[in-house]
Image 1 (cartoon, rainbow, N blue to C red):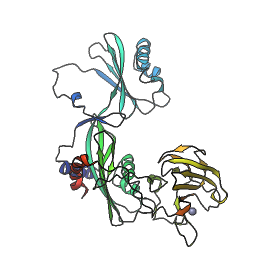
Image 2: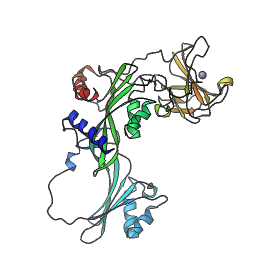
Image 3: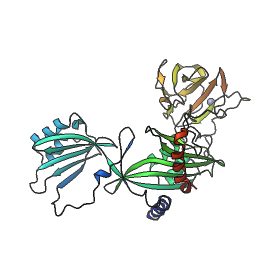
Image 4: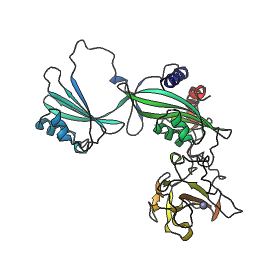
Length: 405
Ligand SMILES: [Zn+2]
C-alpha cells in the first residue's frame, strides 16, 4: 500500500511541478474558495510554553456537560461557553465521532478555549478574552495534496476506483462528473479506463477527506469523455469537456446513482431488459437492490404518484411540454402528486411491485406522448464556458492534460 501511495505522489509532483502539492486552503460553506495564507506564518515565537490541548473523540451518547466535567472544566465556565456558542452552534447537539478540542493555559492550567467542527467547512471556536467568553464560526483551513489515480474497469467504475485505493467519496465525485453523459449501468464495458486528479484534504498532517475532483477522463467503449472543473468569474463551479461544453445536461443518464450499480454487466442479473420495440419493452430496466434510492433524472412536477396495475407503485414526472419520465415497480414512494422535484432528488425506492420478477427499476421516457429510448436521446448541455472566460478555461485544460494522458 505504501509503495502505491509513493508512486501516486510522484505522479502528482510531476504533474504539478511541485507547485500545487501543498498549499493552505479553505472553502466556505457556499463552496467558494478563500485564500487563507494569512493563517500560516512560519515565524517561530521563541520559547513560548505550549498550552495543553485535549482533543477528545466524542463517545456515543456523551453529553457536552459530562465531557466538560471529565476534563475538569467547572460548570460556571462550561455554562458560559455554552451560552456564548449558542448563536453559532448548540453544543447540546455535539455528535459522537467528532472531536472536541479544549485548550488549557500552559502556565496557569486554566481552561481558555474550545473548538468543535460544525461541518467539513466550518468550526466553532470559543475563547476567553479579557475574562469574557466569545464565540466565532471560522472557516476550516486544510492542506491540499493532489492525487492522480488511474485504473481499468473490470466490473464497475465504482469498484475500480475503490480497488485503486480511492476514498469512496472521491469515487462518487468522479462518477458524478459524468452522470449526464454516461449511464454507468448500461454503457460501461470491461476494459474501460479512467484517470482522475483530485484533492485530498489534510488537517494537522492527518488525512481528513477528499476535496474536489479537478479533472477526470473516462474512456468508455473507445470513446473518451473528459471533465474539467472550472469556476467562473461569478464563483460558480462546474464540469466541462475539453471544448468548454458543460457536462451538466437537462437529463441525468441514469435514474439510479452509479454507486448502487455495483453488480453491473458482469453478473447474471440480465433478467432485466433494455429498450426493445419488437418485444414491446419500451423502457430501460435497472437491476438494483430492494430499497435503492431512485432519483429524478430532470427537474419537473410529479404528475402521478401511486399504484398503477402492472407498474406497481409508480411515479411520473412532467419535465416540460415535451418530456415525461416514469419510474415503476417501486417499493415505496417518496413524493406526492403536484410536488415540484429537482434533478437528482430521491423520488422513491426500488422494489418489485406490480408485474415484476425481482427488484428493479423500470424507467420510461416519454416524448410528445410516445415512449422513446432514453439511451438514444441526446440533450444539449447547459451554458458552455463564456467566450470571455475561454482563455482561462484553456489554461485549466492545459494544466491537467499531461496528468490525464
Ligand atoms: Zn421493464
